[in-house]
Amino acid sequence: MANEIKKVKNDLISEIDKRITDKIIEKTNADLLKKLIEQAETINEAIMIAELGTTYKRTGFHFDKRLEKMTDTIKYFKKNEKLSFVQNKKALTHKLIIGDNYDGLLNLLIEYHQKIDVIYIDPPYGKDSMGEFAKTNYENAITRDNLLSMLYPRLVLARQLLSDNGVIFCSIDDKNQAYVKGLFDEVFEESNFVGTLIWRKKEGGGQADAYFVTEHEYVIAYAKSENFKWLDEEIPVEEAEFNKEDENGKFTAVKLAKWGNTARREDRPKMYFPIKSPDGKNVHPIAPDGGDGRWRVGKKRMDILVEKNLIFWKKKGEKWIAYEKVYFSEGEVKKIKERSILFDIATTADGTNELTQIFGKKDIFGNPKPTELIKFFLQYGAKQDAVTLDFFAGSGTTAQAVLSLNNDDGGTRQYILVTNDENGIAQGITSKRLKRVMTGECYDGTKDFMWNKENKPLRDNLDVYDIATVAPYSDKPFTQIDETLYGQEKLGVKEKIKWVCENFEGTQKNLEDK
Image (cartoon, rainbow, N blue to C red):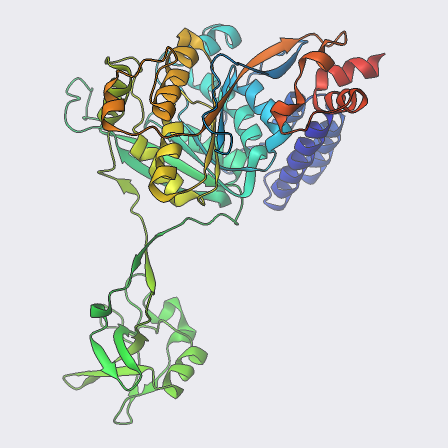
């Protein structure tokens, strides 16, 4: 992946330069790290070298980092014809990738570098939930360090995939939230922290919990950059809300004195000044506590309001109170900010019920997230044609959320899922769920399941890729790797050899050695 290595190296070096500016790392150390990154032979090496620059001066955050186990083989996408399906050649095609998500992310970089709009992940944070990964990579030592070590390189790759206006959401429990947030601060930077949402995941029960009935989980959100915009809900402005009228039309009156926090004179001294009341007296802003306050607008803006007769006066006793006139405009909308506590969106029980309807049996997957929860993030976190990635795909809720939201609003969102096939989850649950909700039938052609009786198929097409391996010591990479699975047109022999050498590091290294 010579091209992708170069892109990742440039991104990592840019991050180190930012750390110099933020005084997280000394310049001399940063210069040395940048030289080492330039010399790295693989993306994994570059990431691990850059990790040395995450000196946690501000937070004291530290964990025992461990490297991914690397093999001397090329990992590539191989289409699974048996699980893939096409319903309409003109419709959207989504992707399900089966295999280790680290390899999946590396391969996605070839086509999707800085092209993903939304990432949602629900990583394995419960006891024993790291399963085979812990066994094969960390000798079955399931600790918080292993969770963080597993997440770190994947988050670095995820950041390379996000577009400049992209956002990532991560579900996490209360035991690990502080640690995982610290990790996100290092990878995505504290300045890109969007917020923490508290999701009420269940109602009642939990009497076996040690001290409190734990009803919630956290969802932390980080932007790729300052270009990210949260899409607040917009509702039509009702004409009835504009209950006053003058020669210019209907208007509502908004108090000009600041209220709430930072409403005192000392908060913004330059916004404390007099304006003339209808009887010619000077009127100053008054704070909620009765002391000197400040206006909502500055002197220049206030002069414009006075000049254009946009101040509405009310008299209360002997005091005049100033309001700004805000006129009604046909078709105008107002934005409603979401609350940080997601109290009544849906629960884990709803997620379990969804799977029961699709598969006809209970408890086939532990604690699945409900579709409505993921739809919430997709609806307000990105535009209607967003590309959404979930690289801890599990039961496939994110895919169903994307499809359902497209059905709701006519959007053209695309999903990319990555999941391993540990305990048969990818082939036994994820792919089967997608087949059933997208086509209205099972892989064996049967249609007799409860979800199908109450819902219409969500349509679209699905490409399923397995992550296959090939040795870099022969011509096999050039014959086995299919460039069309990476957004490429079919290439001629010379162009194919060049493309493989540029994009798959194992082959490139082998050719250079010769």
